[in-house]
Length: 221
Image 1 (spheres, rainbow, N blue to C red):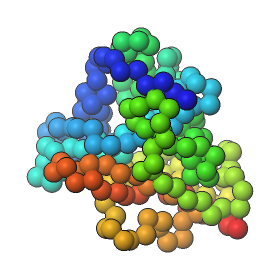
Image 2: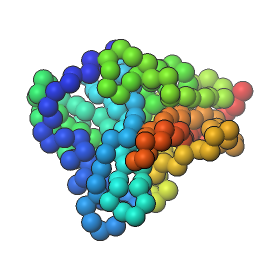
Image 3: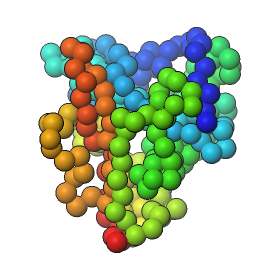
C-alpha cells in the first residue's frame, strides 16, 4: 500500500493545476485564472511502489457556475521518457524531494491500474489516508476476461473529455467535466463494458456522485 506523507509541497498541486487547467480543451472556465479547491478523489497503488497515482476532483469557482474536473495525476521521482507533453509541473516534496507531476492519462502505470480497478483486480484507496480503502468508489465490468494489455497512452483530449483507444474496438473514456448522477439513476452507462464512479463535494457542502470513467466496446460475457 502507498504511504501518504502529510508534508509541504512547493508549489502545491492546486497551484500547478491553476496554470495547467486553462490549457485543456475540456476546460469550461473563461480567460481569467481559475479558483480551485480540492473537492474529492481517490488513489490507486502502483504494484512496484514507484509511482504515486491520484484521481483528484478539483472544483473551479471563478465563473458564474462552479465546475468540477476529474484530474488523474501521477507523481514520479524522475521524468517519464517521452511524456514531456503530459507534464503538469514539478514540485518539491518535503519528504521525497523533487517530484514530476504528469497528466495520468499519458502514464502507462495509471492506465494499467485504472483498468485493473474496472476489472476488480485493484481497489481504490482513500485520497489522504494510508492503507484505507475508499468505499465511495464503485466499479463494474461485464467483459469476457481482462481488457487488452496493449492500451495506448496516446490519449486524445476534446471538449467532451479524454479517450484512450485500444485494439478490439475498445475505448477507455474519462469524464473530465463531472456531472452528478441524480439519486436513484443508474451509474453504468447503457452499453458500457465497465465503469468507475465516485463522490465529490459541491461548494455548498452537498456530497454528490457521478461517473469518472467508462470502458466501451470489447468482447462481452
